[in-house]
Length: 482
Image (tube, rainbow, N blue to C red; front, side, top):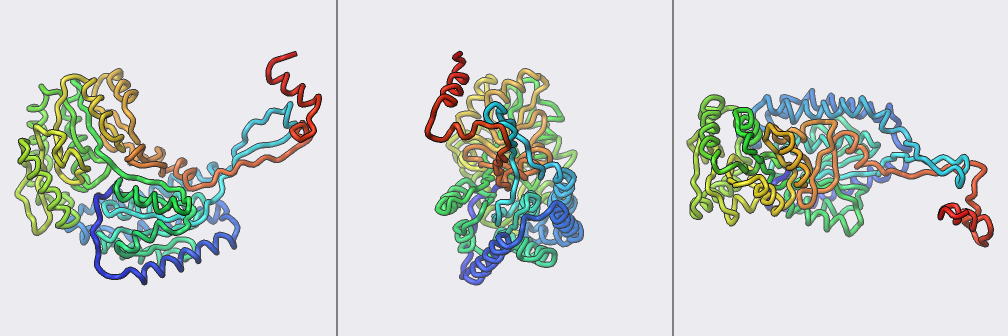
């Protein structure tokens, strides 16, 4: 899940950079020295991973609360702790099958009894640059597939979550040999240095702007990258789609981490005639389920004062340009970084909140006159991580899915695709590249080596000079000539 711009920390990261380089060399040498881990070795590592998450669940809750100011403990359990453990369980159940060589057909008339297959093998040492908003879910989650594929990994947690970063280091050091899994923490200098190493693969989760810099740095060493970059995910409510279940899905999704989630609903598209009803239904939902939203115990705090100021600046900019703002569940508590939920009406595309990923409890509401207009609007903007369609018509859902492009999509739900361990997760275009989660994550972090074992009774030698009648016959057969 993406973050916006990072804070710049004063001071030198020289010790952290030196530690990173030492650990990187240690893992590189170990990978070259030792054979790829067996199925049992990988399962043992995954079991240790799951045990690490469950045994530290209370510490994870405390670290999240310390960094965010407020963070619901049950959500910390569901996603940041048990979500990773569940990811381990799914991978472990399927790993034996995933590791098998996959046979590919060969033309027997040409290749005789030869065999061809794809052999997944570890890439080597993989770096994971984690974001601040889901420090454990994304800091540890992709490492599950990295280890399943037989790799070694180094995690770099975000400097915006110091308590979570310190706990990440402690958990990893207490559980794994540094030759297998390690973590190193620091500030901006470390973040800039991290992608310059000769990784066998690099994963970055964050903003498109920083992701571009990471990709450029990695490109100098031709390092393959997985980029998970976020974007502005729309919720498109069709003419028949506005009901209590739709509002519950959109608002429920938007309040996860208080909007600080890359796959959250970034704005709503709905018919002009439905706007008043939508606003009333949102207000009623908060009154029933989340009264006093800004001070509710299940409301996550904004990560820091700078991001709070950024969000308030979006609202000031929208007001100055004619937007109508509906405040729900106030008042704002600046000292505690707790803010109400805001619906923003009459939005225009020159507003900052429509030009940037919001990452907070602000929901712009944009109206359309026809479904085609709504689809055109989505397509006129950058391709998002997710498109969420709310309708009771299968044909409408199929039309929107067919005419839009996004990393993932949901029908009558929001962001649910990111929670399903059997589905690959990632973006497209400026919302990211590559996939993690499940089988596709295993493939992402594997080298899919093509292997041919020559057999007998083949015509392979016909490919070598000098060429003669046998080659003429092969060509004639391929062209269908007698």
